[in-house]
Length: 345
Ligand SMILES: [Zn+2]
Ligand SMILES: [Zn+2]
Image (cartoon, rainbow, N blue to C red; front, side, top):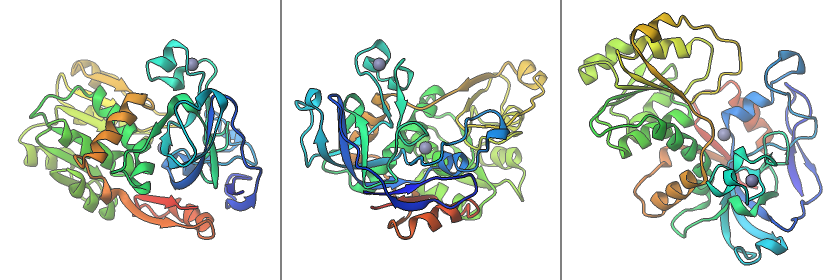
């Protein structure tokens, strides 16, 4: 089968023939119909061994953890739940499916978990991908291939907004209008926030924010973020959700929050960062870090997409074929105006 293969940091992915995966008893093989490029893929492809922190991708790795497709092979233990031809998406890991973590929807906490498309098991930048049956979910008829591949980033954002414990009528500042920041705006509106303001430095991304539920956007390059927020909402944000993940942004979130405010850190900062804690201490801030999602986040997202209660269409920038994919991946490293670019093998 064809797959877009990683070799070395800074080198373009190459489309190559690799072996088709085979399903163990509790696994499912999916023919990928759509797979989104994630910011963390762009980042992983640049990590060198000398960087410290995150482990570099092994040469030969196949990334891609935001996918959906059609079942082509089912392991013997999963034959009751899945059949060839069914439309599915999956959480990007293979876990045991029977431990407490797995049963509670937290397969990524399973002691035997192997990630898919994140450096361990090959991912969805390929014609076929192998997943664990316990974290594979049927796609409802109302969810097309493109929305199916958006479920993963939507679930990331849902998990973050859940941690924000929003009450109806509260006001939220979202830092960062990448795919996760934009999906966060969508969920904040869904959960009843009144003013949802998104800040970013890229005008094209800010233009998308209002299509996804933001009530205003702020260009952090040319405008005073908190001043603009206060003019729009009348006071500081009850909740600041950080979706950037670069050094310095956690301190900014603390500066923006009011006394007693809540902060959720969704952005994954891989570099050393410095904060001056006194701001957070004197304001008695509640800072919450979040990671991944639960299977329930996927399920709710699928259900609301199927019923057309949420519409993330503005997140879709374009789809590309295998032939276009390595170049498209490369250009996303510098072109921050795009939102979600997807491989359609
Ligand atoms: Zn991702
Ligand atoms: Zn488990």
